[in-house]
Length: 403
Ligand SMILES: Cc1cc2nc3c(=O)[nH]c(=O)nc-3n(C[C@H](O)[C@H](O)[C@H](O)COP(=O)(O)O)c2cc1C
Ligand SMILES: [Fe+2]
Ligand SMILES: [Fe+2]
Image (cartoon, rainbow, N blue to C red; front, side, top):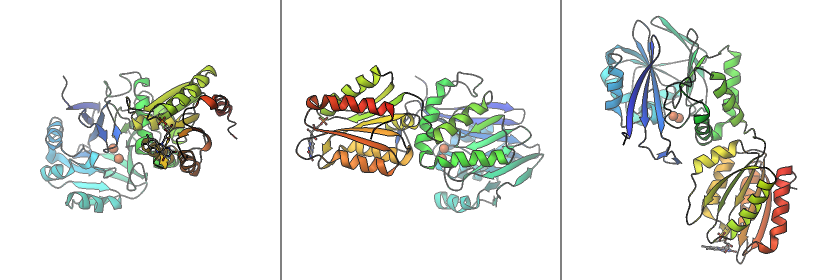
């Protein structure tokens, strides 16, 4: 069996290295999102001829391995500058140890980052705060720094090497999974794009609009990268435009024609029976369906569900009334959809009750407030008697006429 975590060092250009940690150990990213596909943390090292620039680091707990990877290409004492693109501990966990061993490098970061580093780690590095759009001359290299707030924390910056046309993009344009290759030259991008979409939904979902703003800002500043070097997953070298365009589409929750996401919970099968009626109908109508189930046999991964919601054309949510509210797992799904995948898309809510329905109204509120167009089909007990209404709702879901 392969190790649960492993370091990989690769040369991207004559003076640019990638230090990648392959993490198969973390089961839940940010203690939330299931990642059976794993995740990488990418740090970069740029040799300026007069000292090294380290761009970010790895997650907390991997200090020894990080220092070992760094030492395989450079003497840590040659690190003159450390760029912190944002302070989240999946990229700054190794910073305290690096600061100790590197002998006082200057941390280059957003003004807000200084206080955050101190608050999180109790260290006060020598810091130089950068201005938005500033070009720094570091040794024989130049780097442009751009403020890119909320991708993914407020103090996020990106840096751009205009000579090499490399954009160090932070979390943005990153993906979950541990790709077999280092760059998209080494594999079929289709293998990772699903993990990129899931990453967008779960990590920057709430702040998706900033992807659009940042792309506009960078392009207005003449940033036209040939290489996208994010903090997670592949380095995009062959088709940088592909990941930028995909991110833009997901950020805008652009629908893929005919794609329907179905998510339901069912305790004893009533909602499931109704959902089956709807999904068979949708299939007959030619929809392409992805189903996430929460039953006594199955517990769907919510991160992947949110990823599939981003580019769905329509959604179907099923849940019974439970203790005068919504079956809890689907309530959570609906709340997360509202936070991270909000869009003016049609949603069919299928809901059952025993003695007093409440789930339909509640789901309708949660989703409606987020801009979804919600239609509720509610029934008591099992759905046999209302089969016709379910079929009709399925037809109208696809024709975009939920009424
Ligand atoms: C734990 C539990 C709590 C329930 N709470 C309510 C309730 O508050 N109000 C209600 O009308 N029905 C309630 N019901 C009944 C269900 O809504 C009803 O049986 C429904 O058909 C279940 O659908 P499902 O088997 O697909 O989950 C509850 C059922 C269970 C098992
Ligand atoms: Fe982050
Ligand atoms: Fe990250």
